[in-house]
Image (cartoon, rainbow, N blue to C red; front, side):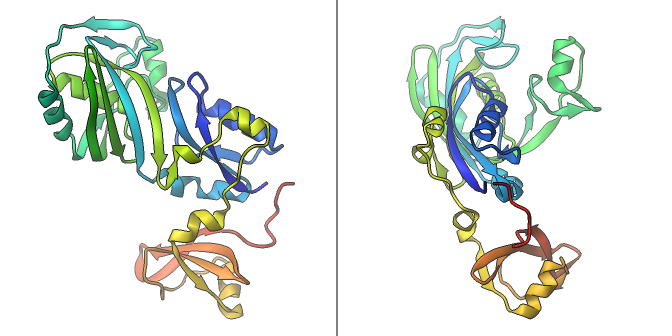
Length: 290
């Protein structure tokens, strides 16, 4: 089974739970997702099956859109409402203050990775340090916030929408927002409304998938925005052998088609920008699962 399935993940499920359910339904072990959602989070989870699993890292790199809710006045160990409260603080903020603080996060910045996360430090996941109550220096990573807008401010709750780069932790962003507001807060809810071109209105619930009410997306549909080049037999023979070739296409990456089928994605060769090397291969004789 080859194709991409857009799942509307429900609260309480892990991303791995969804992958397992989908894999069982389609009788395939060749299945993966393109970006983890915490159990508390909902929304767009892109699941790839069969040869489209080769596109996971390409799809993971896309920007993501979220609607997040902050509960003001408390901070938990996990930075969301599933954790134990470790700090409480009064707050008195206005809409104008929130809008000003939100806008200050636009663009690139360094974000501290949350302690309760699966990022590894010295071969050990951060949440393992947390559970063992061991101290560890939290790594920082560069993030890019493309858009961030206040949706509502009512009593002890802030709701905002944001578009962020790969690897951005919304829980950590919320913690930083509250620090700038001179209070504390924790993530109350999170909905991923978009990943790249995939929107929440095009997703399917796990129940709908179990009842065969879904539509798979093909790799051709996903890759339609990339430059497409039809090739002849000579170039096909070079590409099927994974050869580095002269770069004659305009963009950073290109889809090569043979007999109207995508057989490979090539990208600019970093050692020689005048050449191109294989990035992903989709050969006709590649074994596929039933």
